[in-house]
Length: 484
Image (cartoon, rainbow, N blue to C red):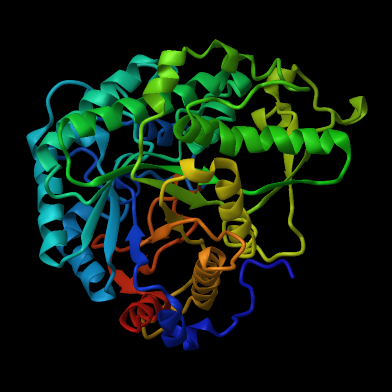
């Protein structure tokens, strides 16, 4: 079956059963990111981000929209925290908007921006919801010329982290330094489908290194500020398999695994980059140039390791098309994805989510076992920092929104994760501490604009008031959490 709306497997009627199966020690929350939900893009002295500039470029966003208002979270902050409280979550992962707090990416913190997060933290703590704060979720201040191509951006990020630690260090329970650096490098700098839209191919590797360096100096900055909360990072991970057993496909899959997984986990957890030898050594030659002092900075002791699960990836070698089938013009005019030596294949044996990813919960235990086997005692306790899926949904005439496919997705992945790390499970030994469901609200979904909905709560983007409608999945998760 290959459908965006797979048949329901009736988890919507089994919330109590799932609640009983969740360990009492497993913390469940939801997650959002500042650029995707906040709106108020020109308020309070907020500076522009690279994503603001990217959305103004013709053809970059699927529906031609931008995030200047989005869900208008800042205008609805009290109501959104009320939704969190009524949902019954243990924690809430939000992100600080770097351009709202440092409009120029340097210097002191903007008081109006600080007031926003001061109000958010007060509201969360009043409802006994544990704050998990992400320092960077893709909204690089536009004033930092070159973005992550520039090594100095990492140093600026360390200063920003230290200042935030000094201001909020007594009220935040967990800090995520950088969110999914692999996405920023692969999509933003390698293939250009995300901001800033660069198509550097393998010349994008320094942007990944600079984000990891930023992570390291941010950990140092937070610890120098004596924050009381735990500190970690969130990396996007996918278990990778070759499309066939042919050597060229196995090589392509190994390269994709390195670029997507190991390039961002090995330096953080092991203090070293994977050895760039083999058929793609020339493409990865930058890894030979890394300063050992940088690796010592990146390899900071962590309290937890965040995993954003992207589903499995099947990878084949990107074979050149016959000359007669190639488009006219220079190779540089072809999409960057067509100039990479690998391509992603479909998982036809699995249904897909609304954003085209395979819905294959059985691969989550595979990923957790891979992390355990690769990193052993170097793997800290794990949080699943972005577990969720986009599915189309519509409000009926009564205003109710039914999304059974999302319920099944969340339930089956939660069960797969819990059973994987249980005694005798395939990932036994992984210390799974928390799960953050992505996402609390429908929001601006990057290059997909408003065409993909991940939220437990529907947002009416056609309504100037951005009316919120809790979906069936919200009520279901509420029941799950109350049944623990």
